[in-house]
Image (cartoon, rainbow, N blue to C red; front, side, top):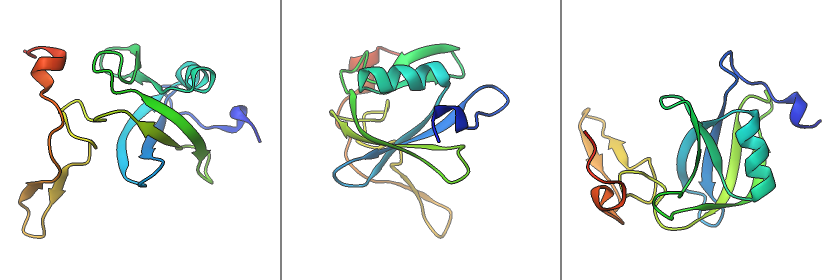
Length: 128
């Protein structure tokens, strides 16, 4: 098996789950196309495809919170990638270590878990 056995969706994208290589914590999920996967493999840092902006983006290009790839896996259906990375700083654009910092409680309320590592307005500017 090789890269040609991966199954991309109708938009040419494949989900990529990003996990901390040391702790096992799931940091984020984003999408890749073939070119961003190839660039990730070539550079050893994660690159993704933005569905909303229709551009490549390098994780950490603005914040400095890059992800160094340690291992790459794909699932038995060949339609989802798993990256084990060394995360520099926070993975979440909201300033948290992981994008999965909203915990849904049994009563339907939401709790925020984890501490904010940076202020997004100071890193990315004010969003409109």
